[in-house]
Image 1 (tube, rainbow, N blue to C red):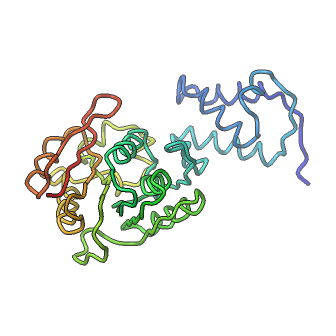
Image 2 (image 1 turned 180 degrees about the vertical axis):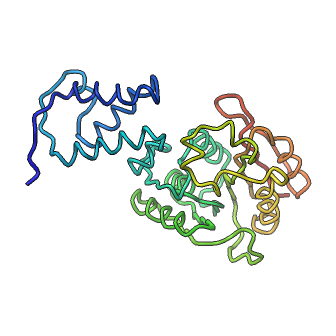
Length: 286
């Protein structure tokens, strides 16, 4: 039998925060709130008001394990198995990239620029499905397709679509496969790997040690390999007047812009993220 002991909620919160502070500084407070809410069902008010609680010992053990994982800089999203994106909770695992706030801006740009009631949309390299699922829910009559090279990503996309009530046709496919088994689309969107290998040494340990390398990094000698291939695919995979949307490395904005201009696209534009960095490139197929 899993006997329960009596605890003070504020004491547990303070202890977790102190354990995490040497590793996360001010962020340790928000991480502590998240952990106590997840494992002990203690909200912020309970942490502040110091309630008497009697959690099962197994829940305390899970909390302790999570704290130790955080001390090794494992992302909290992988520990909890979920991440918020565009106001919704997505399941994530170490096989897919953790959704970023910047990508929410990409969703908004697509919604704003779309003029069709029932657009056909393809998400290339779907990962967690955050882009495809969000677009399916925000443009309810859209027909969403998505693919990824990695089966785990396809599975997680399907799980998130089912969980959130979105209709997304997700399949396993490699963009470097010469075969193109899809129809023409009104919109193609991709957030492909775009971080050069040489940039890795300047990145946070929680990213480089835990998030999937294949979703992050590209060779220094060919950093636009995915953009070239997707632009090539879009030449035949987009309907005339259809749009291609990219998330990009801020260092490559002008190069991706030029790539689209020389690949049969007009109305090409670079847009900045909330931090003022070049983050998105879009264009219309002539």
